[in-house]
Length: 121
Image (cartoon, rainbow, N blue to C red; front, side, top):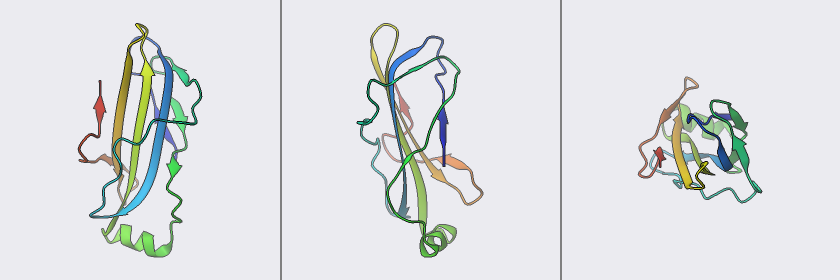
């Protein structure tokens, strides 16, 4: 799994730090939204407008066994992708964006409905 995102604004974003996490949970489970700020990102990146950046998300350490795969296919479990991007705009104002998606059996991701997800300020 690989995550791409881009700055859709008209000016650069500075000190951009992104943390994406992939987890497999039972259908009744909900991930932590938003995930914590990235503590391994150093000073962060500069995000130029409309230039994609990509990362491999942190995975929760659960091996994708046949049993877990069977639960996903049967609709008893979901793969969640949650993310958080913290950055500073050109006026030195801090911003954050939170995202949450569920992985579908056809290979697509759909927005999840966890409170606090898919937020941008």
